[in-house]
Image 1 (cartoon, one colour):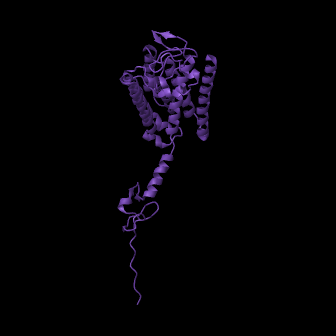
Image 2 (cartoon, helix red, strand yellow; image 1 turned 180 degrees about the vertical axis):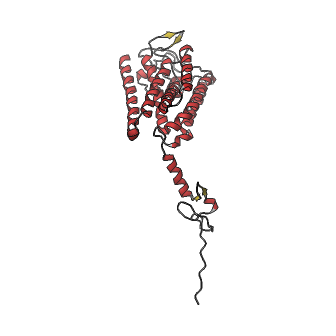
Image 3 (cartoon, rainbow, N blue to C red; image 1 turned 120 degrees about the vertical axis):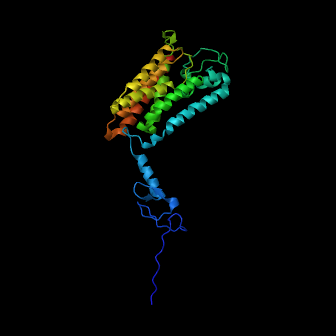
Length: 314
C-alpha cells in the first residue's frame, strides 16, 4: 500500500524557518509578515518593493528631472553648507562676525576684485597687497556665494532659498536645480567683477563698489532662483503675480538699501532667467542634450567675461 505524501508548507524566501501562506503579488514568492510590503493590489516582497521605488524615482518631471527632487535634498544641503560656513567664520573671526563685521574668514573667500599695487588694511594682513580675482584668486567667484555678513544676512537668504528651492527643486530635479543655483551665484559674482570700480551711486547707495570692496552672500544665487521661478511659471502657464511682486519688492530694496550689491543681485537674476529658459523651453525629444548645452554655453560665457575683465584690469 502506497503512502500519501503530505503537502509541504511554503516558507519565507528570506526566512526559511518561517512557514507562510502569504505570497508576493508580483513575483509570487512566499513572504512572511515581517517581509511584507503593502501595495495597491496585494502585497510585495522587499525586492519587488525596492524595484518599484526605483522605477518611481526614474519618472520625469515636466522639465526632465527625476522625482527624487521632491525630497528637497539639494535645498537642504545648500542651506546646511551656508550655515556651516557661517559658523566657521564666527569661529575664526569671533563674535564680531555675528553682526556682520569683516573678519579674517570673510576676507579669505569674499568677492574682492583687487587691484595690482593697491594696499589696504585688514585684520589679518595690515598693509598687504589687495587680494582679489584680478590677482588670480578666481575661487572667490564661488566661495563668496557661501559667506554672509551677519545673522540677518544669512537668515534672509536661507529663508528665500528654503521657500523658492522647495518649489523649484521638485520641478527641475536635483541636478538641474543644483546647476541653476551654482551658475546663478557665479553669474552674480561675475557681474560684480565686471562692474566694480565704476563708482555709480543712487540715493547714496553704492550701486557698483570699488575695486577692493568685499562682496559676499548667496543673494546672487537666490535672485537667480527668483528669475528662474518666473520663467518656469510662464512656461507652465501659471499665474506669475506672486513671484512678480516678490521680485519688485526685492529690487526696490536692492536699489534703495545701502551696502547691497546691486550688480550681484541683477547678475544672478539675469543668469537664472537665462538658465531657466534653456531648461524650460528645451524640446522634449532632445531635452537633456539641449539643456546641458544651454548650461555649458552660459558657464563658458561667464568664464570668457571673467578672462576678458582680468585682461582689461591687468
